[in-house]
Length: 337
Image (cartoon, rainbow, N blue to C red; front, side):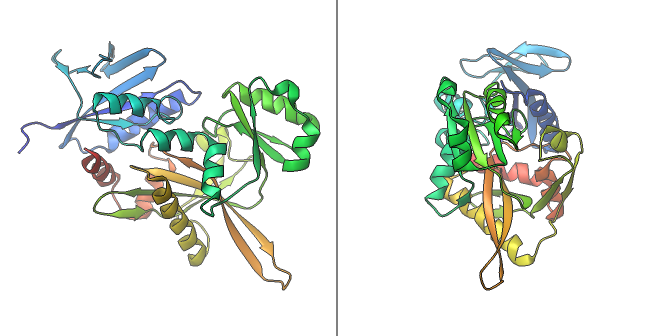
């Protein structure tokens, strides 16, 4: 029997525009944790500065073995890292590689899965091979701007279209392009967030999102959330400034709900995910020649370190499922320790 609590480092921050959002997720996770079971420490990463939050102090982390300092000044090593960085280096596999090398268990998928899910275009092309429906898209890489022919892109992708950072989150650097002369400025804007930019065909429909986690003992797929943005699309203001309606459970048929949950579970298994993920979708509707309506579930992206404030999608879905977020986090940590 253990004579001490398990030490969990909640690792946040990172080097993307969602740094401060990540800090809010860390505080949310800390509030959700079972503190009778776990001693938690918040660790903030910013470039080469890795610091532990100890009250009002910021204490450097020992990076050779990821050592922290307790309240009595003793050097300690966590038993587990709960990663809640939205962007690099916590959502693209870099931090996972470091933890693998020093032998520290962590909450997310492994290096390959993180790298693949962080690169939207690569993920789309991979999952298309398994029959997952995605939007038509192409990638523009930094240095190729001078070779771009906007007319060629528009003839392939169409208008309107979305221009977004290919390796990054979905809150910054995203533009809905409606006119041809908006394309190049949108690409330049997205290049500020990522060295690769994805141009993606617009899909009109119902936006849904669904979370999932699996352990050796259980498989849990959460209720589906419907997202209704008050803006042109689900941008930063819609996501973080309450400029959207997030309806859980979604106002969809039972059959569509079951399909979305089944696809989410299948994607989790195809990729070999670990911990919590959230998959975003657009459901489009078409009419057959015989007049019958058909709904297609199109994957938008996968979040492997989803937001974890009290109002984020995953906590909403956990509550709607009648579960306790504390138990969900405990399931994940105990399974991966």
